[in-house]
Image (spheres, rainbow, N blue to C red):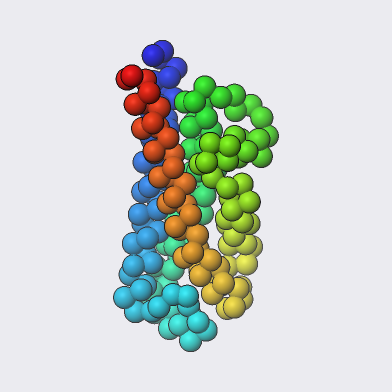
Length: 166
């Protein structure tokens, strides 16, 4: 195993670790809100949420961690994973996503839906009550998909390592 492979492996582990840290904090914030409210949120729940400084802080943490998780996965984790695989990453992002879909790491359509959600946050979160509720509820549903992607990458790495030892 060459130095490049070791470097790429370490980068994948570092990006995976950072991704899991954001996911854990995202899930923890949802857990705290669920002590008071039930998902999916309704309009009356949102009023309670915005009237509580603590719940609102957890809601802001959800928005922040979701955005950070999306960023780290899309900008770093996917590319470092493909480099570790020996793939060329000097190609359009859609091609990178298609490579990941070929090996059952992600579903490209789902990834773009999550990316659209992240972009909606940047433009619309907090502006409109109904849109804010929709965004928070969508993140709640999406966190399971994000976790599955991270688990898929982790399992694939373990499979590679097992094959290297054989």
